[in-house]
Length: 331
Image (tube, rainbow, N blue to C red; front, side, top):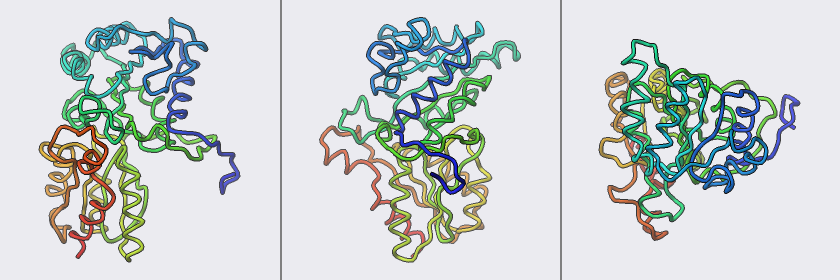
């Protein structure tokens, strides 16, 4: 039972995503799910388990191993008035459909003078930390955040996993949802009723006064742990969860930096040309005179993600790295 008396249910990130899919399929006949192993197998990460039996093979459709083909089919279905949800197994494999996403999904509305909206949702797993090798473990969502014409989401909490899909399906533009693989087993209490997620604004996950920690997706738990460690040392860290990577919520970032006068950007992608670089540049452009220290960045090592567990851990941003960066900004 929550403080306001509403019932809360114990669930996981995976189950919250599945319930969002179930709600979408049940409430709109135009919605269908398609992708590799989403039906009989229940999804590579188990998100769609049971939906084939509930909704049938017309609504939950297994596809051949061709990302370009089934993303293209999703674009065509969206143009024809359907509301397809396309699942790509991992972000690395989405590169095989990059032509469809960049040259078709993102551009058709603009190239047709507004006549051809593409209400398509593409879901994919991103990130490392699970010993799946380099070709399954990179964080490339920053590449997609570079592309005009699409919206890019990174749900990091149970509430966002459960409630981001509905407004994404209502968006007339293509929406890409990046689900970090390390979050699927995260469990917690999910309120029975939650207000619709505002896709236009970042969320303050923890208020603070001394330093702003900016992150998204799978790095959020590490950053919150860093904020706890800093609090034990008397440093008050504000944690900003970007949630939407395109368009970025500049006002939330600017307002937080105005309060704390220091910023640390945490991004599991590579440092060079990263989303962290974009956020840092925007802070420099919009909040330069508010800063009392240079903006710090904590990113993955500039290597293909290693398979070996200890090497993978060494390559990824960890809580201790975030704490150290905050100290450099504050001390």
